[in-house]
Length: 439
Ligand SMILES: Cc1ncc(COP(=O)(O)O)c(C=O)c1O
Image 1 (cartoon, helix red, strand yellow):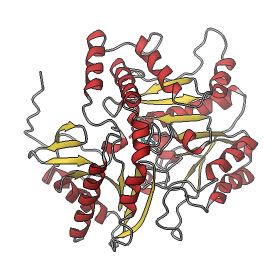
Image 2 (image 1 turned 90 degrees about the vertical axis):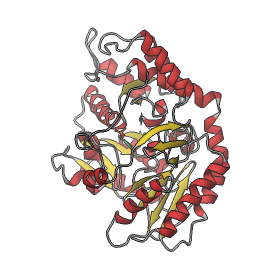
Image 3 (image 1 turned 135 degrees about the horizontal axis):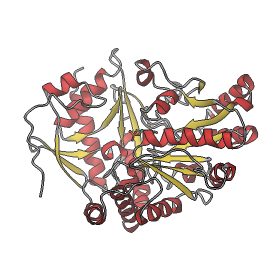
Image 4 (image 1 turned 120 degrees about the vertical axis):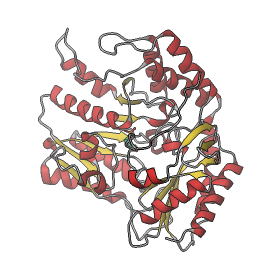
């Protein structure tokens, strides 16, 4: 039985990351999703140009996932995740591990990307504690986005995400970001800029390797508008980490599960970190879930240091590995495999990037970047940062398309089930809306 969701009041729900006063004056409500399309409250049809928030490569309301969740919920709607578990969590962990480099055999479930980042921070701390070290400094990067929990905000390099919250973790230092205004409209990995990784070496030289616990990076910085790492950059970070016994954490909340070409960024760029965070496409966005994959080195070190009969890692969430989420994750990963969706996305990547880069030269576009199935289109600012992007996003909605924006940067991330005609529709709507934009 479907629930009635008649809306009498818009006041009570505090909409996240949204201008509430403006939104409530002219709400944009989605009432249905199916495949690549969604329906708004007026019956308007929208194509989803960003796979939700990079979550749903297999399309909205995939029947196999819906049915798997339903079946799981008929068996059990909750199992305590502390001291007990259920078979689906083991099955999903095993399936996730199969997508990762072979030394990642241990998967810790959480409920979101932000929780994955906080969990990764704690794993790093537990690893160094297990070795009797006092490493408390973390290295992150300008323009980084690592979610909104206090750990992720501390690592954040996006000013708006920090400025209202001054009491964040101390001892976080930021490397420079990898975008350069001198190299615009670069498709794939920029040829130059690998030496920006030496910022990590500067941190080592300045603070001492013995104080640095880990370096966190999004292999491709997603939320800040798709900053693709220069060739050789991630390799160089890896070498500096190895030399100084610093753990390298890849935050793959966006880049995981086929979004940038390989299965994960570690695969796409042939650089293996020590810890990998993921979320979003893990369940095709259908049930909130994230995960942290620990390499054998990290896992074994933490377990070996604990006395027998004790809890090795004092961490976990009530909903870690919830049965509905595990069922959704298992079904999603099966769908990706059965429908060969990572390959399908890789096959369509050139067509998608050709289409996106064909917008080069538009007077309102400052830069375009892209790799795999994700592209950032940065609009020329009108002098009020973010105003043009926000307006464009709203107009796109009423013109029949959902697109994620950060400030003035649109982030296109088509579903992996997209056909060429869908890419055409996405780019056509984008161009027409941009042409008509008056702010
Ligand atoms: C790289 C990265 N880390 C963490 C997060 C936070 O994920 P969530 O919104 O599920 O908490 C995001 C969200 O976009 C992300 O892109």
